[in-house]
Length: 175
View 1: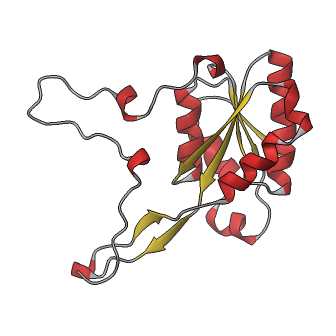
View 2: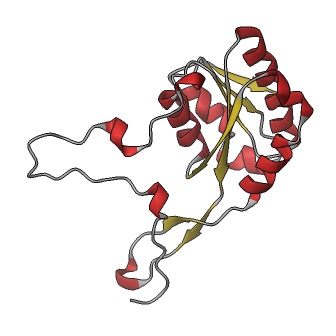
């Protein structure tokens, strides 16, 4: 086959239900169970940008006031690649994103996070889908995101706008 194949990392593989099995695979088995201490916490999308730093500051205050945990989510970048054999449509593959490690170290050294319990969750994929998925897994009370500025948001639509339309929980957009 021409081109390159990238397999999904082992920690992100989801089991597939066996059609011959008598019991269907439960959705909860696809991801490891989350820490119960962070149930009904505040989810915040964070990538280190100025708008995500403002969203993080707001989410810290919200979690502190509600005496809940803070779930900081960094969604790794994805690059489009074309599968050439058979003229298949373009597919997306996860690209290793070492930015999560850097962000984690910066957050671990941040004094402003000492007020609330927090965790950093890394995901790969569509930002809106992954933020909503983390919110569902932790039964979050709200999702906080920064607004998108610039031409990319105007062309493809902002993450905040798309998330607000599809989320099953309150979405707070910080300018």
